[in-house]
Amino acid sequence: MTPPRAPALAALERQAAATPEQPAVVFVDERGHWKWKPWEWLLHEVRSAAPDDGPEAAEWQPSLHGLVHALAAAASPEGSAWSSPEVARATAALARPLVRGERPIVTAPSRLESVEERAWVSWALEAGGALVLPGDAAFLAWAIWWPRATDVLVAADELAPLRELLVSFGRARTRRRQLARLRRVVVHGAVERGERAAWAALGIELTAFPS
Image 1 (tube, rainbow, N blue to C red):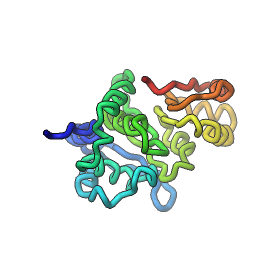
Image 2: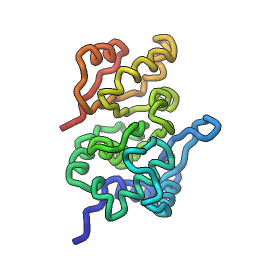
Image 3: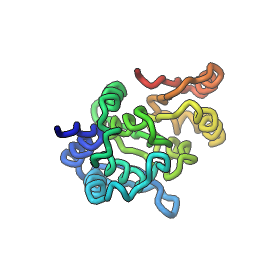
């Protein structure tokens, strides 16, 4: 019996066929500059990569290398974690209405171990969003700030340090301008009431990962 296709791979192939030259990933190069690569490049790299040549989930970093090899692993017989019914359901639950012509700018998760994190990547590809890869989990705040992300996934234990960094980036007016595109911050895990209030003070309402 043929195993089900991973939603992330099917979405990648559709986007590469429909808009091959549109930005698929935004990343930091070796000089610290933000760059991008198109859908056709990403699909080619994933098809060319050896699935056993990349980092394991526990060693995942939100980088070009990490994403390419994670998706290559999803295409392998051992990639069933990406094609499980749970990932498919969670991917569908993450969908949100897009205004005409909107392309989400989506931060990559800092970890890639759970159904929620794999579903987030799958949804970003399905929505045709540009996936922002800061290169290291410690730089998630910059991945939100500079590319002006629209959709962010955060584990509950990452909320406080992320918020503290964002607050340090400038005055309230600057923060409002840089975060104006932010449509949702989706959290997986239990959020303390005080932390939710602290984000609300920044004008950002936290959204629980849809069940």
